[in-house]
Image (cartoon, rainbow, N blue to C red; front, side, top):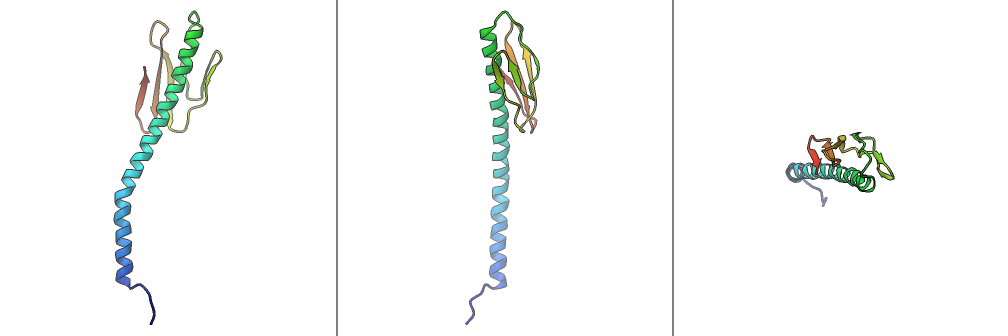
Length: 114
């Protein structure tokens, strides 16, 4: 006697796999998007900390502002180039020498520190 799957059994198994994929894929994509947004936020924190460290060390010097997507280097402090999850990054002077960092993620979410 030959042991094999019937066509109906194979179709049922494929249908179950399709249902599982339909349920899991949106959740996995949302988790990936959240992870990339968090990577953009982490980069914003790195740039912000470098700007604040420079500000604390050299309060008499003006804070360099501008695009920080390709990295941010000021005084002896440095943030490496932005990861792929960052669409844009800008360092601003929020007034009285206080740094402000605005980062936009690849998915359009904007983070402003502080």
